[in-house]
Image (cartoon, rainbow, N blue to C red):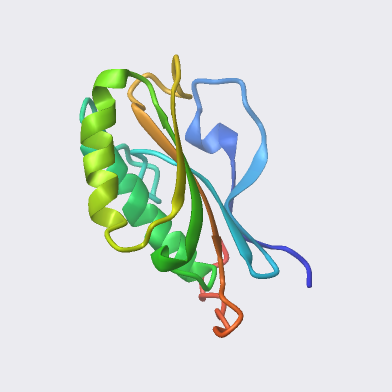
Length: 146
């Protein structure tokens, strides 16, 4: 089975002020594994949500992750691993409180890192997600393959 790449785009469209020209996508389905692009305060239309508010950025990131996982045939309950990047230790508590609401009863593995910065200064949090489609579910690909 070939990898399925969902919501393809070029970085020059998302970062017009930067000299970038990379073909990427929002999600890759490789067999039963799902890999998502790092999710931030950007919604799936490219609008930034939650300037200065790490909890709002997490909520936007997770809403996007939920939609992308469903398009790829998975769901939040099938997330195995999160890596959470936060630009300031002070944002850890509000970010993790928001994550806790999304993952109540799910128990994914999680790593958290405090870093110097992300692609844009307004980004306070970025979440890297890996999920699976369990063998007892077919996980059909959604209609959107943009």
